[in-house]
Image 1: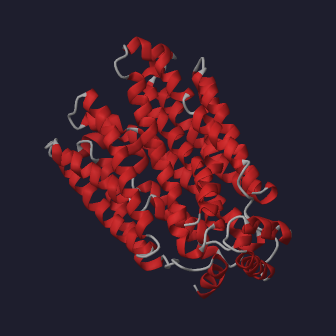
Image 2: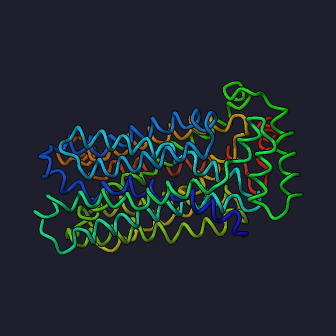
Image 3: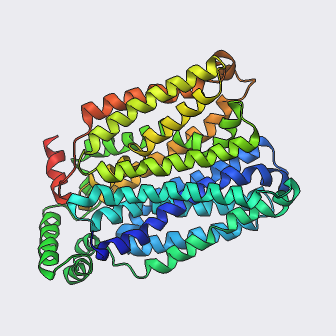
Length: 452
């Protein structure tokens, strides 16, 4: 792939990396800021969940921001929010201040989680679009891996008292480095040519595409193709949703199912899950890093094969393997046969998610909506994703409380059964409803939904 397109894509994927870092940093820090700020378990839950509410709000407004101000300027806004959140969280003095700065960071995540894959899809050639958008998921899992390593090495060899006083603040503050780099690099990327065409500025669209394509002739032809497609559609983003009810339904369900796999409960509470499987605290922290590494490695499979195998096969196989892995994990927990079996089941689940429902959902969300509806439709789908992320992450610790009815009747397996059953339903849903979009021009997607 030409460096003309790789450079802006790598810059924009820093938004994905910050998405992963910001959502994962809480995993290592919560043990220490709980004591530093003298918080109850309920208050710790709010400290974790507050960011997700910010994500929901950010995703909800991202469509408006991107349509009015452009993809580039909206991403710059998200970068500023990341910087403010990192510094503010590091210097938080009580629960309220920490929650406020976590919400600000959540706003940045919500905006970047929608706009990074959308921007990448809008500047990528159709035959490489799946792989290019999957790079954003690679950045997300890289962010998780980096923050788990940061958390581990910041606290490694230090006393608990030092981590309570300083360590957890350093974990948050380190985010300023990638956030600052993201902010600077965004000034050097071109605006989305599709946004310029939506605004009727064809010369600016051609200028953007010239900086991304091999020749002026290719850029000119692509501008004309985008222009013809948009000319045949309504100018109103809300009105453009007419006739796209099924597409929006697909987007919402993909987002909901991605969360109902339980992946974020495992990523947020990974160290606690490993510890509950009979591992020592130190081993649990190390296995948390291994979990993030597996997530990182298997995302490469999606990047390599999403444009050749297609979207449906990866989603179908991924759902099947996740269902089997969660069933095995549930069995080991229920029968209390902990050990290597439990760890292998958990890691195989993460591997299956990383090669399928992690990156491929973002690929589909970025390409199934036509130009005039993409901003609003993606906002709806991504907002629903963050809403269910919040439900899953908040419900998991409650379902795992040892004195709760759910825990006692299932011996601590209740949430895993929910996730396993969801994976089976997801597999059926993909086979029956999801169209294959590999190799299609974005401007041809509207005709596909018209047929549906």
